[in-house]
Image: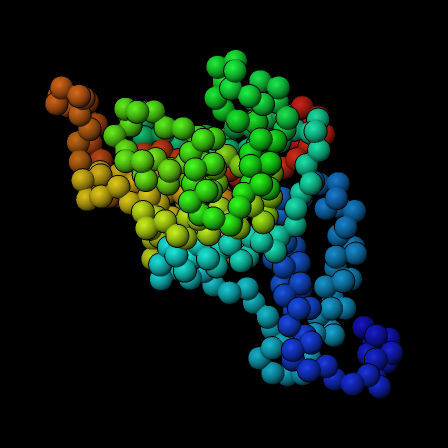
Length: 315
């Protein structure tokens, strides 16, 4: 760093306008530096660590100088004043994140933590159950719906994101085509489209950054999406942003979709009771199970997602 300072000792001080593009690139790089949140292939991450550290250090020396407040640059806090403001901010952040460039033949490693109905009577304080699985990126079974498997492959989802237009209405239509809802759900067409958008967020990995940004903007334009006005604790104990589809005052539970408060990447989903109630069968009889406001009745947290080259390989 001393040598760098000596080399540029006679260089004129750049004006603020010239620094803005570089500062934005620095922030985007810094947001990706955390090993816990990095979603790049592990070989790329390992090979690039040294170069990334040097690049960030040198860029910081050139862009941030003096003793003023600009010396420490921090990512903006999530704007939780409204779902629209939050999702527009999320779109801007994810659009600057790197494209993983997945390849045919790769696999998606997924480590999840699941909980159902809070905890069982036998183990009321049970922790979420952790499991691992490998999903073929270009799975032949999931490449089309002709064989009865309606779950799309990860390649189809990546290509869906990559092909999304800017028009929110068209994005809603494409998401609904990918994740059609049954006629017996009781949802309106608008609600079904909202759930299709959120289902795309939930299922899509690897993520095309520009496509996910467009998807977030479509959600930002959706009046049926709300945000919890404070960070919540997810079932694994971490802070998270919670957005959810508003199904009206009659709903006893809400399905929350959780985002990382720093990177705005998707982390998982949970169902939370919004009032005390007793669960009943269709005939009105009690199932013997009751809930208190705030109980988590279901969760699926995506603890780790990564592209790997072989089935069974870990990142």
